[in-house]
Length: 233
Image (cartoon, rainbow, N blue to C red; front, side, top):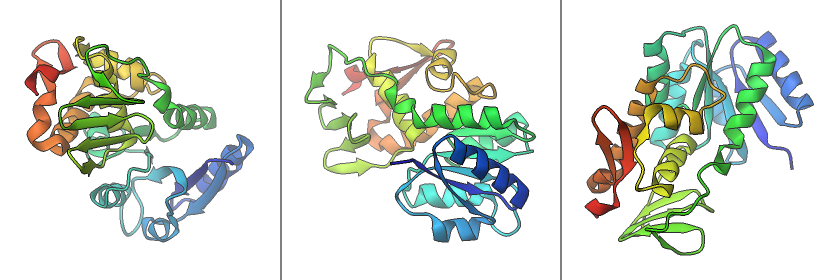
């Protein structure tokens, strides 16, 4: 079954061009011309949203923030002419998974869509220090399930975006290793030239906030990067 993509942009020509080309790549594509229309169309079977930032009415930022507050993990790629580093960090801070600046080439969009949808292939190596059960890592009351893409603390499921899950998966797969920010970028965003080291810090802050009392599972080494610190548990 073809993966479904929702294109959200108030420029009808852009929507039509993206829909035509992505359909030719084998995806099932629907368009919405505002965030409000997109929220009505969005169903759990969508695999990805291509989302314009600047639209009349609700902005793309507000739509993404709303979805994340509702614990909707659908991957989001922002499409926008706002391409400063602060603009990109704002996008990631509200839960975006990737960011493409306008004007863009269709080839670039296709590559980035394909890369985001395939990210779950990363970090499959299992840690010898973790208690492995099926395709899970279990650290005391913390469980990371790589089949269901789920993080649990006790019996509570912690909603993560795809990018957040893949960061914690990468770190947990190699708990003895300190990952430099560039290492994380290369592993997760290697097809995205706009990702900066500050982007990683934004995602780590979001992850730690969601981990709550278990935030120390992700520790930092000043001047180096981040690691999964099971010695704290």
